[in-house]
Length: 220
Image 1 (tube, rainbow, N blue to C red):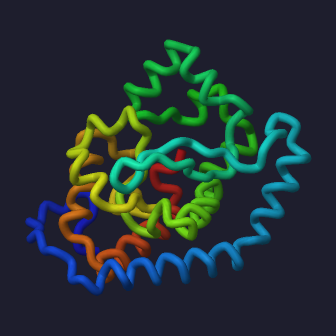
Image 2: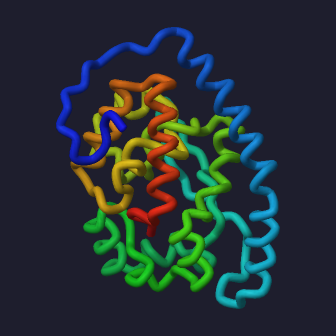
């Protein structure tokens, strides 16, 4: 893979051809639609587990507000891995929220009392991310791009540059180590993707993401 975590190779910034955005949109629609059809049994399995597991009873999906292209906010879908009203509980608990911010706007499942037993499994296997194909199909996200961030994280980035592209369900940061890589390095990696974006690089990143998921690298 040409540039992932630890590679210090200099990147030449190139503007993508006018064909790239068109091909990317078609690729996003076709692949996300096929993925949703092929992975539909997983939706049924998770829904069934949701009914059986008492601690996880509630809505199947969870939507967190993220910032997308040109600053437009949208609800990013995930299979719910936390108790109902988890976000309100986070903001109400000042110590937990401080730990969340200090840990690059994430909490490890073992440190997060809001995560259910079933939720730990969903996160470890990255199954909780599958509903993001719905966001891709809706046009909120692309298959490949910078990870969509919450509003509080914007200060870590060159905002104009970050918001000039669609966020992605898969990206260079996830392929490079996901939650093992914090700010400011995470922001630098995402900016490098924007500078070098093309279909060839997108395919390499998709492969890198599958490898990271298979290894469970940085998944929590």
